[in-house]
Every structure is written in C-alpha cells, then in structure tokens.
Image 1 (cartoon, rainbow, N blue to C red):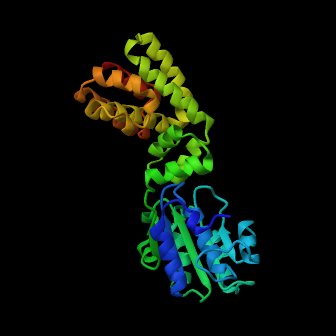
Image 2 (image 1 turned 90 degrees about the vertical axis):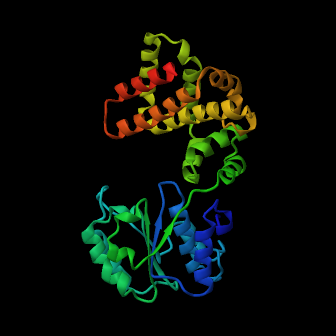
Image 3 (image 1 turned 60 degrees about the horizontal axis):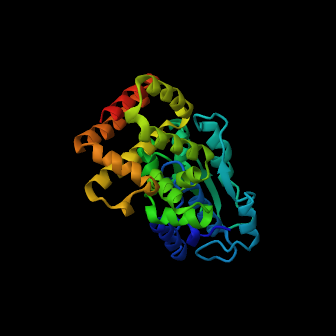
Length: 329
C-alpha cells in the first residue's frame, strides 16, 4: 500500500496535510491544482485515508478496516463525486451527491469526505449550488476539489478553500523512481523524466509505453538522416509521422530533447550532461555541422509548430515546414 512517505515529491503539500491533522486544524474545503498525471488523485486519496484511519496517525496505517475499505474504493464515508456529462459537472450532480448527502452523518468515520475530480468542469451554477455548503459545512464535512486549473473557480469558491498547487517534481527523483519501481534502464528513465518535466504520472506512462519506444526510435532515425534526404524521402517521412499524430506533442518533445543535447554538446563537449547519451556519436556530428544560429532557428521552429497545431493549422503543412527547417540548419 502507498503511504505518504512513498510519494515521489510534493513534500510541502504532504507536510501541510500532516500538520493540519496533528494540530487538528483540518479545513472543510481544499483545492488541489496541477496538470494531469501530477499526483492530485493520489494525494487526495491518501489524505482522505489518513483522516479516516482508525489509528489516528499522520499517514494511513493500511491495516485498519477503514484503510482496507479505502484501498478497495468502498469506504462509505469517502465519496468520489461522478458526473454523467463528460464535459461538465452540473447542478444536479452536486445537489444529489454532495449538497443533499452531506447532511447525513458519517456511517462509521469521523469525517464525510467528498472528492470532486475534474473540478474545472463545474459549471458556475454548480459552484453556486455548493457555496452555502462550503460556507456552513457540518463539522464532519470535507470537500476536496481536484483540478488542472484553479482559475476556473468562482472567486467566492476560491476565497473559501485552501488552495494547494502541485509543483514539478525534481528530475533526479523521477529517474530514481522509474529505475527502482518501474524497472526501466537508466537511459530510458532519464529520457522519460526529461519529457515529463516534473510530472511523475506522465513519466511512468511514457516509461511503460511501447509506442514511446517506437516513436523515439523513429525520431532518432529521422534526425540522423534528414540532412542527406531528398524531398521525396522527406515526404515519405511525413506520412510516417502522421502515425504519431495523436501523440504529436511527445514527438516534438523528443526532437527538442535531441537538439537540446546537440546544443549542450556543442557548448561543453560533456557527454555526461546529455539525455540521449547513447546517441553521442550522431549528436556530436550534428553539433559540428550546425551553427548556434541554426540550432536556435530549429528550436524556434518547434515552438511555432506547436502554436500552429493548437490553432488547427493543417498537420501535414506544419510538419513539412518543420522538417525543411531542420534539414536547412
């Protein structure tokens, strides 16, 4: 069972939770804000388990009846709020599952805890319906909102909640976790950690993905050979890149990591600071051929490609322009 001491990163939030429990100053409303995969659900789950734990410690014991129920997601006083419409959480959802239900005392626990995932989907009407409950909750009531965007809440809600922002986790901690827990080799752990940019969930997903390895190999092969390719060869590559369209941001991240290594090697000649150490031969050759200005143009072109794709510019056109810019520089 996962406990607070096994969580990768987020020490300040964990200390906040444990201090409030120890000092008996638990708030009635929290907002945990962070990108998808950052660890919001895990932290909320562990906080709720700890609050309900029969041993009344600063971390869940994992042995009492409440902890075992929570591990199986059937602790009756820890309620995960659901919603039928995929794009929004409406008034009826919160009235039925929170506003009305919170008036019923806990079945067998000191608290009744409601966890609202994807809380950025709460409509203004739903937030207003929750306002009185947050302002005047029963002593046992706690609501935890999980969101990728705390700015989606009304000021009246924000001002009545303890807002905790999840910060990026240090890359070294993620690498160590991937090597020890996911059992991936060090070079892969470093690549995945570099991509995840402090997001443990994303790093684990990448490390466990066969598609990621396939994509990485394609990017490396492309970048090693692009300078000698004819236009017909580039257009063939474009067709293959279309196969990674659903993960194009990860694809572009791989290109960025490659050219970051090229730039670092050009400046320092230090193999040890490279993410893709196993490709040092090709990276050193590219570093010798490309100018600093050319590498800067490529990195700028990557940023422009992301912006254009977000603006729904034609995929093939965006990638074609990027490939030509890489080839030219």
